[in-house]
Image 1 (cartoon, rainbow, N blue to C red):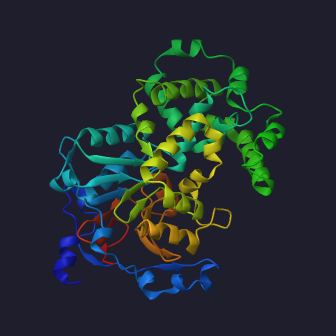
Image 2: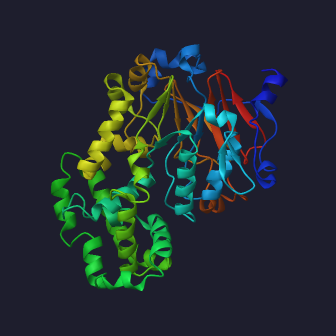
Length: 436
């Protein structure tokens, strides 16, 4: 690449000087970091083909509109807004409002999941996301595993008692309590009357926690979906979460009664018709496709690849919404949920050359995803000959503190119709540019 083409790849940032000073102003070519194969692939000639590994892309493979991908904000509203600035698609005005740039008006914003959970600003992030939508942005909102855990926890409050769903509120874990604390502080803390209708602590526990016979009943109802070690591991995980859940509530500054009150209010806000945030889960989809690029939260496997061989992405998204609302157990423990949580571990459903062939037949050449955080900007990987663009760059301040990163996390990944992939992160000194 020439020096001029690299300079032109740097987005035009428009926002506060504190953000602009932290963002890279130079660009360099983006090398591939890793090549992954499975044992099956080592004997597969196509997986070793040089042209496959190099990832030659034709003109028809690129999206018709530029894509801006931002993922895993984890309820850090400032990091999310700063990332919109880093993309060059949004201008943050002096009054703090979001305004689309010329680039932003022409592109598609893909929000890669895990918008919620850890805090400190779930509600503020939701308002920023809504503001982006109302600005006229073309926006695609993907489901993340943290987002789904919250939805399933809230759905538990309106589902009939069943071993298939009784555990889903506690299954959310301590991280989801940050949002409930925000809901309580925003909507209930100054309304003492709201607590008068909340039952005793013991009754709240009965309504939120699975019963004493849950594990035995769960073993029966989970047959055919969870078996053997995976089933026992899930039961052990749930029992561990139950034992520490009330302490986690207290650590957030909530009694169990206040937690239940906040959960009921969150259920109203997110799931009831007319609720302030019902749009969030209504807009959510499992996957989005642009050209030869498939966008998901975590990754793909052979089963999902085979599904895409005979189902359009739009059909998969409709099935996702239907199963999620009709049978949350079947969704959360079924094959579709692997797209939200795979890290390509041995315990995850595998991706092999067979799955890559299914994707290749329908023209999918690359996967853009988040979920696995990186501390030095975005990463490129080849898995069985399928390009993976890994866009989780540790945005939220809780994760940044644990990883030893300073400042506000910010960054975005751009897939441009002209045929290049651009990665911006304030944790990497230059903008990375990849031209397959």
